[in-house]
Every structure is written in structure tokens, then in C-alpha cells.
Image (cartoon, rainbow, N blue to C red):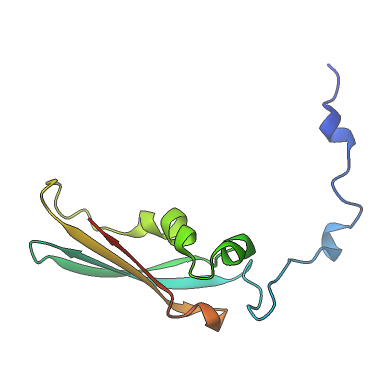
Length: 116
């Protein structure tokens, strides 16, 4: 069987050891490191819980598209919200996620909220 043509095209002449991770000015290196996100879950029946998730820091693409990181919170953080409390469609909920620690200090304090 013939080799796929993509195997014949080098993606880069730069050896892996010399490649650099792109950065955004003033934001350090958002493609590496972790962030700690405090998740607060509140429900209309008074139930409350908190947890902290350690996640990969937002990528440069997320930061360039939206400095408030709304899409990063929606696509990455949301799956860590909720604590399994209540399954009734009548039970309202409010989830809050706040970056409380980060290798890049400019991310600390960014917050997002989901209300149902």
C-alpha cells in the first residue's frame, strides 16, 4: 500500500529541541503551566458546595480571542461545575468559577458565572 502523501511533507525543519512555545506580550507564557479555579455551586433549595480544579492554563488562542476568557470557561471549566445535587428541572442553580492561582498572575481574579 502506498504511503499517505502527508507522511512525505515535513511540517518543520526546526528540530523539536529548538522549537519555542508562542507567547503573548505581557501575559507570560499562557501555553504552559496550570491554573487553580475555585468552583462555587449554589442551588435554589439552599444547597451550597465549593471545590477547586487544577486545569491547564488557557492557550494563546483563547486569550487572543477574548481577554475575559468566556469561551475557555465555557469549553474547559464548565465540565467541573456542579456537584450532582438535585436532578429536578425546577431546581435552579448558579455556578461560579474564579481563577484563584495561576503561573501568569494576570489571570488571577478572572471569573465566570452560569445561572440556570
